Length: 271
Image 1 (cartoon, one colour):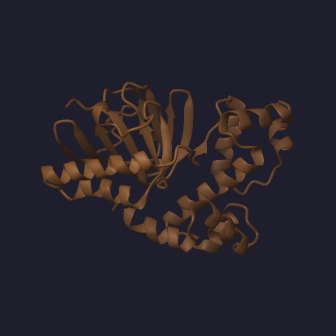
Image 2 (cartoon, rainbow, N blue to C red):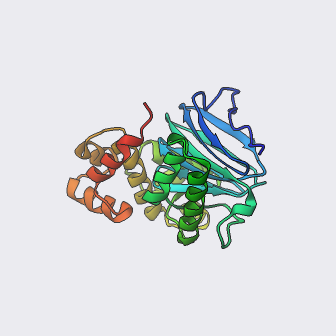
């Protein structure tokens, strides 16, 4: 099988200098350490790709969609679709490439994000770390396809607006999630009306600006927790004055407490 050369970045630097790869005739798994400021320039490959940031974060653009992803989501990129990835912090990218004929049943001919099921994540790590036999690899592939087929069609990833002004605001809020400025102030700083920015967020992300900012704050919090920062510190850093309110919001978003999330993320961080 000929895999896409995803080892070049926009600047020509390697984003995966230390990659582990396991291949068979039509199925392959790889893991690459990525550095801040690197990325994979616009490209496509004939294989389907399932991409997962086991640590760090990724901005993925594919077929007009743009997402900011961490370890709680898988990204599905059908073969032949142009896409690019950028990494704003150090982390680890785990990918599975497979012949389109091995797709799960259902509508998997479009890009999508799905929640990273714990069992599916463990399968990906086993494929790149465990050196499974061909029979074990085949069983892992079948189970992974079954888990993906059962994944809900709707997702809760942090979508980014396509409108350049709204996207600039979104990028700033991901960098400084505790910024309390209301939408009117953001719109004024970019010389546009509040309604224009509000429409852009709703049309491109499916969320109001207020809803999107809450999601972005918790998304940023997940990254801080995975890097070992204390819950109290993270709560303040993402704009919560009350730690208990932060814990309640985080649990509603991720289905677990910040402490448990941090503990689960810790083993996945690259050495």
